[in-house]
Structure formats: structure tokens, C-alpha cells
Amino acid sequence: MDRYPDQMLARQAKFMGALRTAGMPDHFYQQTIDDVEFREWLVEQVKEKLGNYEETETQKEAREIMGKNFLGIPEVVEHFGAISSADLFALQCIPFSGETLKACAETHVLVADTGMSLLDMRKKARKSLFYKGMFPNPIFN
Image (cartoon, one colour):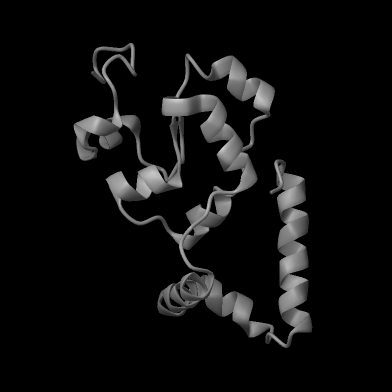
């Protein structure tokens, strides 16, 4: 999977081009943006066709490097509820190099960001999600 935003944009353009070539009408894109019910239906259709969520290569790499300090999409869904299709799409790519992840693996936690604050996460999550000492600041522990 693409690591950098420009590569992701290129894949999005290729995706849209493939849909147009297959006969997708132009109003499909705007309807997907504007119509929540249509968007939810579309996501369900795609999920049914593709099966369960599978992590991208960059997500797998980040999980391997970060270990228990990686809270990916499966953990976020399990502990905090469903992720929007827009967030799922945006989170496909981990924007950090393997070297950066290795340098931060013992001092940082990488969380699939859905806009929830750490304090809200702490309130909503089961105790097992965060281990003792994960956050050095006493406000979190």
C-alpha cells in the first residue's frame, strides 16, 4: 500500500478512472459524498463482497514494529465502535517510515485517529486496552 499522500492520491484517481471506464455515472461520486444512506449502503455492499477487513502492508509493518504500542483499526472498532468509511479510507496508509516507527516504538503509542481525544478514549475504553504506565502523565493512568 502507498506510504505517502501523493501516492494515495494517484491511487484514488486510478480508482475513479477504473469506475468510469466500467460505466459508473458521473453523479455517483457526488451522491456518495452527499447522501449518507447511499454511502452506508455502498459500504455494506463492498464489505459483503470483500469480506472482513484486512490490514494494509503499512499497517502490518507498523503493528510489527510498534507491538503493544500500536492500536490499529481492529482495536479502535472493538473498543470505540464503528469507523466511518471516510476514516477507514484515510487510515489505509501509515504516514511514518519504518525508521521513524522504530525510533518511537518504546516512547510513543500509534493510534488509528478517528478524531477522539485521548481523554475520551480513556473514558470509553475497557481497562485492558491501555496498560499501566502506557501514559507517563498521571492524568491518564
